[in-house]
Length: 98
Image (cartoon, rainbow, N blue to C red; front, top):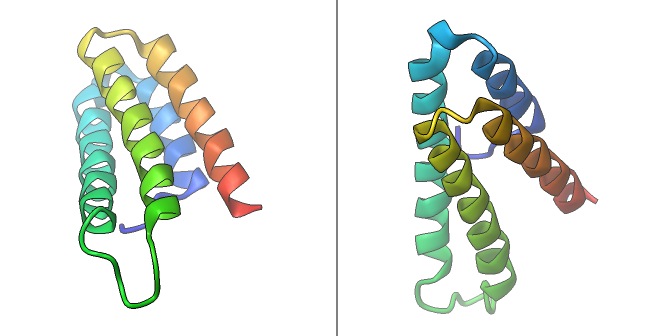
């Protein structure tokens, strides 16, 4: 899973509604955050031969921040906030697709 799809985030929101799947949901979120953080690290590296990756870095940084906020909400067992942030994340993904 290198790209996080709208469907994956929607599935995660559904899982959050089931307390029995909390650990599974948190693990999935951690994996998403790990992927985005890794991509962010790569985008912040040396300039590529194809030009600057600054635009990509800015987008990834925004995604990482939102996912970190979701993780914080989960750590505080604030499922409604985590779900709301994930819905905002979906909207952000839709904007990037345009």
